[in-house]
Image 1 (cartoon, rainbow, N blue to C red):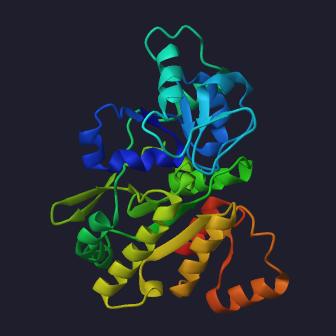
Image 2: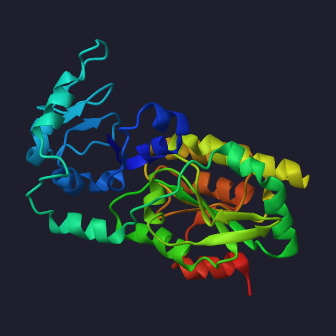
Length: 305
């Protein structure tokens, strides 16, 4: 069994992996690349979220939907019953699998494989981040940690979303990157290295906090750091750079605003429903604004000379 898209986070649960050793790893990248990636995947596919793209012609016989997801002409798996996954298992057994696959990957599939790493480190939930809060704050105070960036949100087709890849690639080595949701796939293929916080604590520079629904983890992590530092969240050495796509991201943004977080950068474009009047209120109260003309320009503005 391989995960795809935001289900990458499933691989970060040790008990799940120990109970199901056939959870073999993760395949592919974000939702918008699924047509090429599913075409190249030599097995059955079970869709559990609304991120399905209904262009399934090349793999219609081996893709299935479940729960609230459905596409015309695709077999839907019932909600209950011990044998409900039998069609998925049968399709997987009938597929060639990785061994003995003769079909050559598409050009898009070859490019995706070449661009992404074979190993990703996941599982940085709240206990992990909160557990090193003292060391993070001490490193910031001593100048070993210059800034923490939360770079995440929604991924999508637009080329302008490459801003987030560029931002992460250009972030100085003495900064820490937190990410979550499918926006992580814009930066988790890069080699970010590690950062030495001192006192024997060395962290990967990129900490994957999980799915979009794990935004609560990021919020609680910010609150934990602020509590340790005896300050408000805006006094932390933290900058938030979000990628927006759909309605769920608005809920996350509203949660951040409820905390009183200011100076959030949002892109690649501001939500279309934001009227000039509403935007003026957000700018006045929270200094929220769009991402700049380039990642480097925003990094320079955030970090200063």
